[in-house]
Length: 411
Image (cartoon, rainbow, N blue to C red; front, side):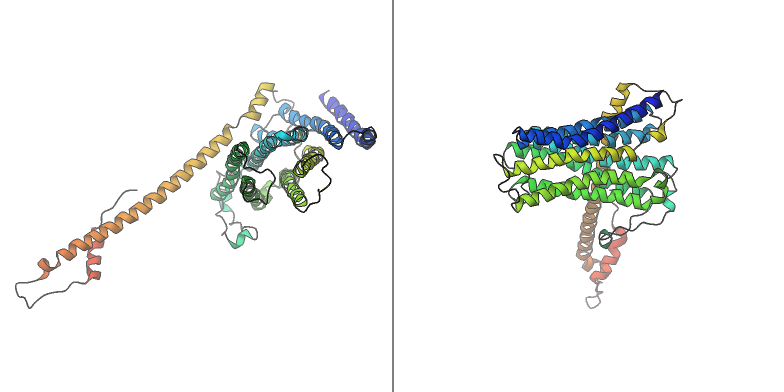
């Protein structure tokens, strides 16, 4: 019965989407003839696409929660699938309420970092389930995987196994940590009037530096994700990872380059005279949000294909309550634990470097003090009663004498 209802819903919604897409241009023309403003037309068209997107994405999420047979995998899949409705609703709200756009967009981009991390953890969980996890010896048998050009010109291949996984994970965590920090900086600088939203070429505004930090950390996180995929492409092949990588990377990268292209068009004056009563920057932001609302409809179709719950269906598996699903969705304890472990590792590395530096300084001081003591004792120890007979000790010999006598200092 459940299979029949799913098929009925699927085909019904396909028909609704096709009818809506066919009739939407005519509705827009009618609204324009009735002298509705361009802003209202944008709200209407974007809202229609949001309404088409939400049922598709929510259906995919509920299917995973209904057939929650592999929690370690599906927990991360569900978090990735939530990206489409969050992007869609967030962009429409930013289009409808432009004054709140900076806050809505930065929160949306924070979830973007969360998605990249969860997709990485999904791949690691799959490798662990397949017997190729980071805690097994199988990964250590692989040859060191070279970096992708041009990174290969600056970095040597990372050691295989646990060290390779750790370095890739650090690339994810750096973005997960930096993105909320730059978001907080954006909120504070916006309140004091020095943020300069979308002023990418104004070095006196904080937006330039936040954007550079975010884009560098995001690019490095996506690079580490691609490196993991290339290094374990054979092990990941059964899960058909191509479309999954395409969904995540295309959504993140395309939205970024689209925003950059719009800002460049704004900079060279393509929006001059087109803004009407609105500022050119507001038109550029509205165009970006409008485009995302439309693009998320097609992204939902791609996500539905790439992250299907069909492979997880098991009629004998017990169902779960809605509260448990929501707890899995909003529980970020795993991310907090990873960040804490990363912080402890960095603290230990820093303490070790400081201890080694202190040890070197103390050793140098001890050696200098020992040489000085031997020099002061040189004449009484080696001169005989005969003033004509004396032995001269060189500084090199004193140093050789002092080396075995230097104390050992703990870290």
